[in-house]
Length: 413
Length: 119
Image (cartoon, chains in turn cyan, purple):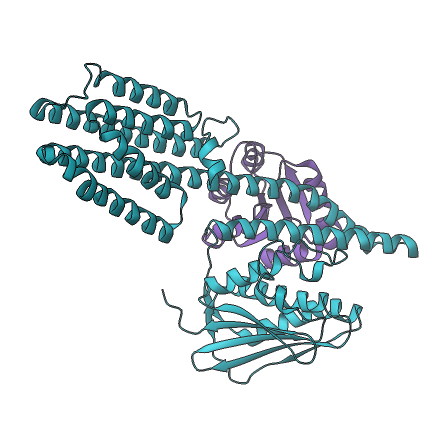
């Protein structure tokens, strides 16, 4: 978040595709139009207030000139898009100077109220933001009612006017800053998504030749050591391809751009297909892979490719982390929910790791020899959640783990 | 034996498709590096039984080219792409009968080609 604030988006990079560049330019123009309107409105309010109410003894003749210069500088900085953070600092400083020069208490108001209020709005998640902002408002009014009014009862109305003005500007300011922040995050998401799509395309293009020609060459009967070498090329190529797919899926899930194409699908045949797919991998390790499928399972409204990915990721993981015994894929129905259980007799997952095992790039037990980057479970769980379900984990006594995918038959829209 | 028109700008991918079709099917393939030469080939009166088109080409996008090819001569078309998102696009187009994701699996490609030509 802070990094984004400091660096800001850079929509004038030449390597962006034109459509994205246009989107960025339109959004930035809209943003600057709003910002200009707010500043002009704020200045007008202040001028009107000064002309109708006058200023107090602390006022200097240059009071109205300085903030205009300050705002001009901040607008210039913002327009150059060098750093939003500098923009924020300069606008707060401009407001504070303005407040202090026009009204002795305005600066205090700015510093104790606008700064924490704005910063809280920028950097905190929703719940903390609301709490901190409520505290700011509370502290501010406490300050006015119990500290300032007893000392200056005679200037009550004017104080209140300035106070209201500051609140208005702070709130508008804060909302605009939230807007930039959201824009920055959105743009970054667009860039990273575009970048990942591009990179995965560039990785798959050479992979296409590597894997395609290797598979074709396998059709010619090569003498023993060379056929094994070629088999390695194909297997490693497939592994690389899965990794590219996982990275792309992970990025799409993170930005909420992964769309499901739902149809009626049969969970049993899907699990059977996954079992067939994973069985060679299990037998290579000397493991038995069984399926225990429930009878009369109703069809489910889901994306079959993605659901298959969920079960496959769990099954592959189970095989990966089991050295002896068996892996069982079973389906169940309880009320309006279907369950897929992937049960293994592997090493199990220690209780202190059970919380973090679903996080991306976390791999069980710190085993460097196990292939993969640790995206499988994260993707599987997010896909299950997109289907309105979830994945939970519990121990398989005395040894191993049970991963349970729950899938509601009626998905809440 | 059918004639297949393949449009792809990446030479190794052209070579791979030619090898797959040559080794695993009894069909013939002609390759083009861009949309204009492919349309020019149809303009000469050739009548392929299947189009295979890559998603990104130097002078057109794959889907646009499939529309133009099918407008000139109506036969099934297969879209090939290394972009994972292309599958969503392909699913919504009546003009695209099948979708192939790169990296290509030779046996799968051969199956899909036979299926598309049989349509």
